[in-house]
Image 1: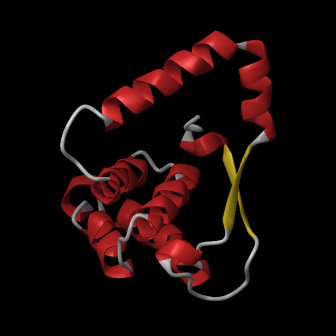
Image 2: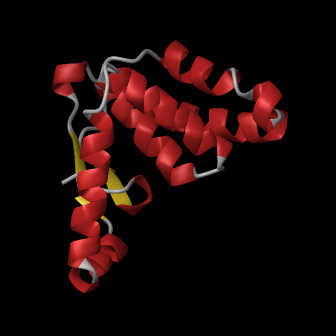
Length: 130
């Protein structure tokens, strides 16, 4: 199942500063809120998951590019949790810290500098712990 970004708790199980793509030791655990939603509205969650899978499989974009786009979207809507989620997943898919930063920096003229600066701080949080 693909958990919605704002409903996932990321827990680092390794304190080293950098992980190779294959060595990433990060466990994604569904947030308590998500588990309650899934219990109460299981069919809706299944449908949302199916939409997410269909969207990912609908064209030629690779996982890294998809997560860089979703990182930019998260920055634009000021979603701290989703920005962290997609920064992590983009790095797991092979994105470099420079690519993460550029995905946010190119938004400056669209979303404004304060929002961009905030999103860059979220990206730097991930880079520092990855």
